[in-house]
Length: 246
Image (cartoon, helix red, strand yellow):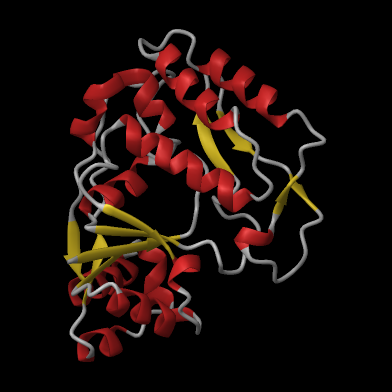
């Protein structure tokens, strides 16, 4: 059974949807430290002039706060700002209205924390593409598993009876791969497909919100969500070769 564990991200890029599609169990991971400059509260959007950030303002952020503790600054009308930016950027996209409706379905609710909002944004994308139907979604909060870093991730996977842990590339900096092997869990890293699709505003880029996929391709965008992965030893070897060649 494949387990994916990820921090909440605001309307994330297609690569995150690839991880969801590959998972048998997807675990939301909001009870970890918020990192300033992460994608928890912001994501890139392609516009006619440049790449812009869709950002949710935060209130009284303190060093060491967990994602599920970081409050949203609702004193700013950020929802209206977002809707205006998205409307202008995708006015000529064939599925613009579907994309805007998806965003509105999230924004019509109230959220105290950025973790709650970002989790809701991912789930809205999952429902649009039917990714919520054939896998289980869980939360590290409900699992009540203590610890930190690599050990906690492993304990979560074991608690869910997973035998494969699929993760993004950032985990290579802290995962104890050997500990996973000894526990009977095979670590695999995403080999992001980054499949091109018809996209507005110049040269194709995959590193923008998956709202771009919704606006430009609509429901058929599911064909661009094609997960691939690579065994951790091969991944690390490839990374070393890449650094040497560069």
